[in-house]
Amino acid sequence: MQIRSPIAIKASSDFSVFREYVCGHETYPYMLTWNSELNTGKDNKFLRGIAGDDVCILAPRGSSKSTYLLQWTAWIIGTHAAQNVSLKILYISYVVDVASSKSRQIKAIIESKRYQEVFPHIKPNKKKWGESEWAIDFEHAGLPTMEEPYTLACSGLGGAINSKRSNLLIFDDLLKSPSEAKNKKIQDRMLENYYNIVQYTKHDGARSINLGTRMAKFDIYATAFIAPRWKVIKQSALLTIDGVENSYCDKRVGLSTLQTERETDYDSFLLQRQNEIPETTSQGIQFHDIRFDWMPSKFDRIIIGLDTADSIEANSNATAAIVVGIYNDRLYVITGYEGRIRGNSQKIDLIYDLWSKYQSVCKYPAILAVDWHSHVKSIEADFQVYQNDIDEDSGLDDRFKKVGVEKVKSSGRGEKIDRIESHSYLFERARIFFNRISPVSEIDKSELFGSKEKPGKLIKQLTDHNPLDHNDPLDALEVAVFVARTYISQDISAA
Image 1 (cartoon, rainbow, N blue to C red):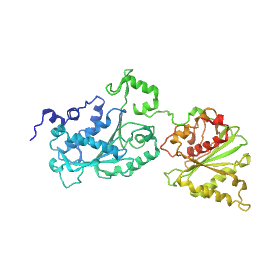
Image 2 (cartoon, rainbow, N blue to C red):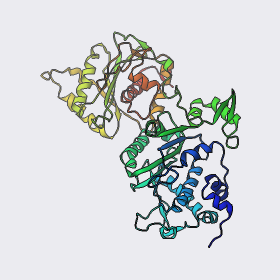
Image 3 (spheres, helix red, strand yellow):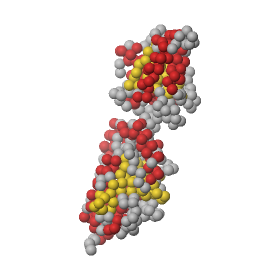
């Protein structure tokens, strides 16, 4: 029988001692909050000493969150087995490969000599010791062998989800970079997996735990991991105590470094170091560059920007159209539409209606600028058929046949925010004006332009861009401006 040292015995019930003895890591004062939130001292059917509310701890970037969490995971596997409880853990990162890398580190701890001294009843199950799923030796630990034979399984919230039933969900490294946090496809996929799959893997009394850091204004920590469903704990790196600024941990990051980061990129500092959502954001066009004016009585040309929906479901994106007029090397955002309409025929009817209101005051034929992606490829052919069917008996204006189509591809032009900000020069130089008479969205009856005093839906999307929203009117405006720039003086439009 293995003789255990006094410190090994203490490590079996004190996680801070375990970290130091088994892993060689110091527990800093700011980590004591993590310890109290994870080790609640409460029990239920499945959990011993760690039961409680689902908790989301937002800690500063670089605070050793992942290291702490995977060490804690190894420790509670031992503490539960000592009480004849077999934990079933679902370890979730952004992708399964990241979770598997954490899994390897947890296994390495369990295989270490000092862990074996602290928890002599734990050893690997040689028949089930893979990277993304594994189990301890239940028979050696004195645990029932008839239950589902796994201790820890990995999943990726942004990909395929392991739907095994679990009594502890650990979320670690869900966001690795601001670009991931701002990517709508990634965030939508994570939210869909979380709401439709992950939360249904929990046994009654199961608990979810997350240690993370904010990466963007509208990331998953602002949309899903929120109160009251989650108990949210926020920690900041730069602290002010009695009017004096201090680093949360000088051994992790110095005060001067934090102060320099704050001066260099304030929004990123607030998010990643302070876990605060900035009241303002540099995403999009600066609000003071938005200008309203009365529309001219005539235009050289009009551009109709069109962003089509790929679905008409209530929670999907919509069809949006924005009409931009060109006059005297300036762009005028005249009117717009946002609604849920079926089929290309109705979309082209909408285009005709918008065109017919302004064609009589235009010098040159209009241009239809289409946000081009896979599900709108048919619209060009249908548009040509629609134009060809116009004759004297149709009741439609024959001049509509001269309207051209410009296909504007998003690929190769950066993220949506990059495409928006590429037009900032026009706003800064007072070359874009919004109609003082604001159109109203048919979806939610909100004003699209609004006013300087009360910005409308499109202005809000333009000045405070949320990459996780559909932003359909903004997409329609961007493609219209992209095409319209080719019809004004290049010395003005060159960004």
